[in-house]
Amino acid sequence: MMHGSKSFRFIVLLSVVLWLQHGAFGEPATPPTPKATVAWSVDNPLSPWNLERNRWAEFTVTVAENSEIPKVRLTRSTISDSDPNRGQAVSLQYFAICTAPVAASCPKQPVPLSGRKTTLWLHVDEAFRVNGTFTGALTVDTEPLSDSKTMSLTIQRTSLSARVWGGIVILIGVIIAWLLTIFGRTRVLRDQALLPALYLRDTVSELKKRSVDAYAKQVADFLPTVKRELDAVINDLESQNLDARSFLPASWPGMSQPPQAGLYQAFLQTESQKTEGLSIIVNEGIDSILPLVPNPLPASLPASMQQLLSDLDHLAQNLPQPAQALRDKLAAAIANYNAIPHAQRLGPIAGIAAASPVTTTSYSVRLELQAITAIFWIVWGVLSTGIGIVVLILPSPGFGTAIDYARCALWGFGLPVAGQAIQQLNIATLNTQLGVTVPRL
Image 1 (cartoon, rainbow, N blue to C red):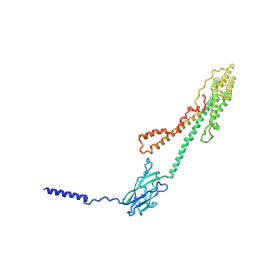
Image 2 (cartoon, one colour):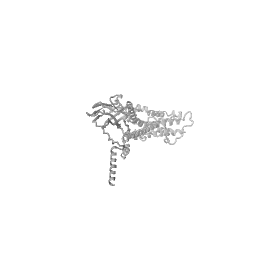
Image 3 (cartoon, rainbow, N blue to C red):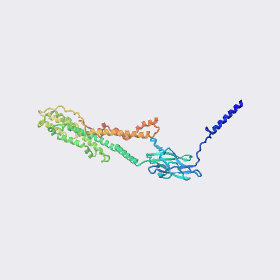
Image 4 (spheres, rainbow, N blue to C red):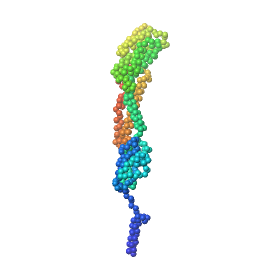
């Protein structure tokens, strides 16, 4: 009984071994076909390869002697944009191996070799029109399959339109830089130099409006010197006259000789003293007698009033004069009027009248200065932020570490030094930069 059991187990084991040897379906298992052993090599095409000049690149395939002559084909492309932020890949569909540098020589199937050393051409399809620099490798295999070879390539592609647009962008950048640095600074310097003169001119214009222009002709006829001096100061302070004397920086860079800063400062000091004298005559003299002028005006003013107006008008001669000396002469003229019998007495000299708000050219210049300052800061801020993004963020595929954020935080301290001068363009300092005192109205 034991002998029969052992025989049965032996028969079963033998059947399993035979079944495994001949396969599950009674056929022997087929071992994998090994790769053919072919000694061969590929010479890389010329690199970098500029597609704008030629979409054909020559290379050679060399096969060892007594080796089977295989066919070759492309099997893989790892060529991609050298800029990691774009991630543009050049897939295998754009490449072809050709037997000659003509489109008809590019078969869709593997290309046969013609000898131990075969010259072939690599072609990039016209459908590939992405600009940039692309690097990587193409994998070349034989048929029948042997060892794989790679061709390292650097492919460059651009176009005439891209270069034209690049030139346009450069030109735009040059224009913007010129407007910001040269023209903008010239305008700011000119406005800075012009603003004190405009303050004086606005002061004198308001004095004229409140004195000569505000009174009837019967009163204004007795103030010819005051009117002439007011008009002279206003005319002298016009920007055209200041330009004619080379006192101001030019509106456009390099369009005139350098400004005469020293002469301009002396001129403004003289005009400021004249304006102060006219302000004393108008505010402390003419305004004081206004309540005494009959209303309605008679055909002719009383002789005493005419004499007082004439005395006040003479005070405007030989300006500028020291302020205290002018006030003494004004007090003497009023004392003479008060001494006339039956003349209506004048009380104490009126104080300086409050200035009425005036919207004039100086206001517009201040607005221009403020606008230029704001534009400078906005543009410099945008440019600095944009440059920071291009330099710190875009080239970093792994951006987001603590040190990356630290660099970004410190980037703001690198704003252009040119922008620091803008901080000094405050209105409070303009009146004293050229030694000018603007009298109150």
